[in-house]
Image (cartoon, rainbow, N blue to C red):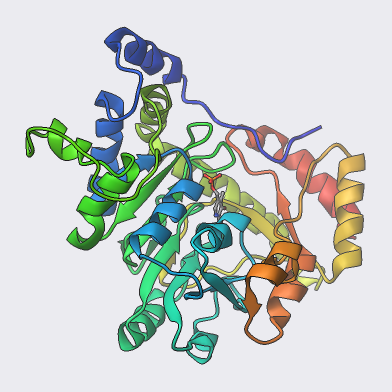
Length: 374
Ligand SMILES: *Cc1c(COP(=O)(O)O)cnc(C)c1O
C-alpha cells in the first residue's frame, strides 16, 4: 500500500536529540527552543515566535490573548480542523461559520462583513493547503470594524501572500509541526506575534502565567504569578527534532513543490476532459505544496475513487467534515447562511499521497488513477 503520508526525517534528528540529552536540559526553552525561535523570527519577520506543543495550543493562546468572553463571536470557515473552533469555544466564544471561496476553499472574504454583529471580536482565517486567503480584503474589514485577526497557518509554513509570510499578516498566527505537516516534530507548533502588542503577554501565558522568561533574561530578580496561563511549551527533545527539520526547510519545500507540480501536470488532461478540477493558486500566493487535492464531480465519484485506488494499493483520503453541521458545531456555533461551497466541495475533495520519497511511486499512482478516472 502506498500510504497517504509518511513523515520525512532529515537524518539529523537523533544527533540533535543526543545533544539535548548531553546538555542535560530537557524541559522547555533551552538551546534548541531558542534556536527555533530565532529561525522562525528571522524567516517570518514576526516580532515574537514561541514554540508550543501543538498548533491547537497556539490557537488556544490566541483566544486567551484576545481576552475573549462568553458570547463573543469569532468569524471562521466551517471547512477546517476542529481546533480552529475549539480554541475559541473553550473561552465560551461562539464560532460564526462563513462559507469558503470556490477556487481556494478559503474563507470567502466577500461574505465576512455581513456576518459581523456587535459581538464580533475576531476573524480566524485558515490558509487551506498552504494557499493564502485574500488577506488585504480581510485586513481592511478587520481595521474598519476593530476586529483582531488570527491566522490558522497550521498548513502554511514557508508560504506567502504578496511576499508576506503567512502567520504574520494578522495579529497572531499559529503554525503546526504535527507529523502530517511539511516541517515536523511529531506533535508541535508555534505562536507568531506580528508586533509588540502581544509579544510579552504571550510569553507569560505560555509559562503558566508567570514572568519566568523575564526572570531568565535578568529583567526581574524573582519570578511570580502575574496572569492566567498554562503550560504550552514543548520540551527540548521535541525542539531538537524540530531544529533538524528547519535546517532543511528550504530543500523540503522545494522537494514537495516538485512533486506537487508533477501531480498538477498529470491531472491537467483529466481536468480538460471534465473529470476533475485541479487546485487553483491565485497569482498573489506562493504556496508550500502542503497538499495535492482534486475535486471530483460529486460524493459518489469520490467514494468510488477512494475505494478503487485503495484496491490498487494507493491510499487517498477525503478531508474535513464541515464543522457547522457537526454535533459540537451545531451546539457551540452558528452558521452564517447556507454555506453551499463548504457543503459541496467537502464532498468532492480527495487528497493524494504527497511526501518526500513518493516520487518513486508517482508513475504507478498516475496509472492507477488514470484507470479509475476513465
Ligand atoms: C493540523 C491542523 C491543526 C492542528 O494542528 P496540531 O498541531 O495537531 O494541533 C489546526 N488547524 C489546521 C487547519 C490544521 O491543518
